Length: 367
Image 1 (cartoon, helix red, strand yellow):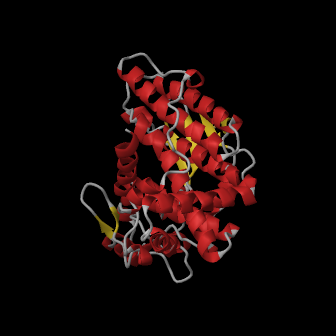
Image 2 (cartoon, helix red, strand yellow; image 1 turned 120 degrees about the horizontal axis):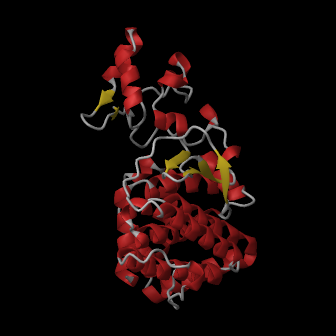
Image 3 (spheres, helix red, strand yellow; image 1 turned 180 degrees about the vertical axis):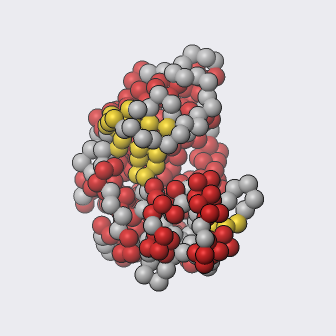
């Protein structure tokens, strides 16, 4: 089948035990039916160890130990893979951070930036917005239930148009703000048109709503977002890379009025981009990446505002983290940017409670 693949997908190679943020810690590890069947047939001590660590009735997963996979060994490697081979690993462990989706007419292959190496590749990719058509013989089974067979292809065409427009946009905060306004307007028209049976509108014919401060966000919107489950004291253990700059945010702005805080934030952002205008490219890339990552969920739920505006939210919050780190530490290394992007992706993109709370903050202000 034809597969649309992100332009840097094939450059990925797992860092193994040298990875600074292991994918075996901090989230559940679901087990596919194939893995459960293999574990049920595995004999001897290993078979007993595997079955003892499986929990759940309908949805199976490994029982975590101190927040990490029980088979994550002292060398930061998978003991299942080392002892039994790749075929005994759960599918998610074999594939991550590769995101594979079979939409029926075609497939999608992306990299998830919850992985530091995938995050590094995104930040250095020459053409991060491209989805390249390739031929692929073997691909996961299609589970799409949408009966509108032409909808995935219409979505792919609209996404290509939006990514082209993002690439053509002026590489400034004002340029990204215009694109965010376009996404906001497109989401409204696409929802209304799809519900009415009219198909998707052409993004290039959309007239955006102007004067919405969607990049950077206002200090009041940042305040609201940091009052969600994005930030909590437990984060100091779960993700110090996020906890430290977010904690510093309160030290900077807690005792300032809205006007004082907005002025300070604007000065930080203005200085940041004035010192190195090429920094803006990063937030354009992030917007395009998160737009692609969520886009094809629309095949099933038609939640245009939710999926499109998540890209705007994520680009803004990563900008805020970068500004805070630079203000506090005086430098923002490539290694630090990669670690923060990976930690943020896990905390905000893959945590449904956090993602929904951030979206509600945005819609409460502009919805």
